[in-house]
Length: 305
Image (cartoon, rainbow, N blue to C red; front, side, top):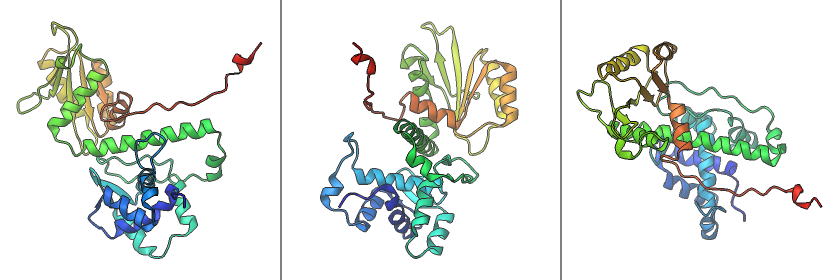
């Protein structure tokens, strides 16, 4: 028997998590769902073409991704999956086997929903895909582009969930690692963490030249709600105290319109919100690994005589 597609793993994942109201380790979900689908040891050992992961774990992971996009589950903490209140209610009110329509809705109906990061205080608004066949009839190039976009969004959500759980000190270190990967500072030693009591609102300093004559000051904060104008004004004041000309304020959440307006008015502060932070970490491979996929394309010019 072939390993089931990811949509067929949605219900086993949902049912198992419903038995664990406080959440379950991802590895426990993998095995429970595999047992529910009666996978053989040979099937469990089958790897993706990239050899990076077992096929069944990859598909179960995407099944959980669909439950998260539907607002029914979340990654409670690193490596732990847990149904939301909406998920628990859905599981209890749909005690019998899910219909094909329900499975299809969960598998395809929320693909355009951006996954909610751990610091968000609002529930994502579902935007169901009304024409599922369009996905099935898209060209291979279109499907590839859609898949890459989907994987980036999923990784971005995982990054933000994880960043919300690391210590403030480690978060500041991660931010400096990212800025170094982006090309700031001749070497990693040119980026120093200075956060702590009495830091004056400065968490890191980047020397742009060997003598340290030009510096960029960094504030990195994990906020639960949007960062407002007062916080940016405070950072601006800290920069003035250092006689600094450049500053970067990075947060895992978002900024209010007033904060953005103030940052633009002073022309020396750059704001990076959670979405942008996750995108930069993906692009510069900080906490993220990538692999190269060779895609063949017919070269008609080669055959011209």
